[in-house]
Length: 63
Image 1: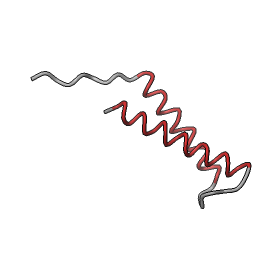
Image 2: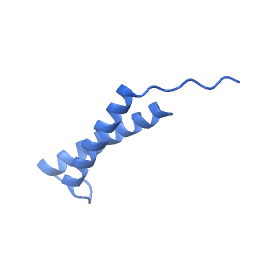
Image 3: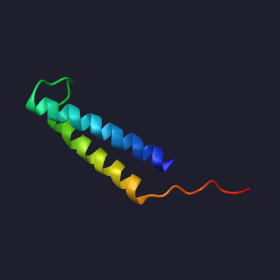
Image 4: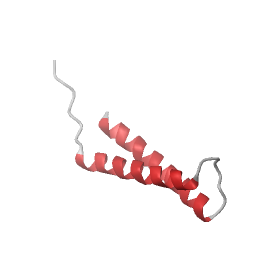
């Protein structure tokens, strides 16, 4: 479960980071502030990568 959340955070962070940087240096494709998208993208990307790196999924409990 943790790996799925980490993967979602990482991919979402990459998308937000790309859209934010494109909005800062080029055309803004979304109606949100490009700086806010960039900051959120960095935070989500770092959180997702660190969760993938340091967290381990516990195996399913045995019955």
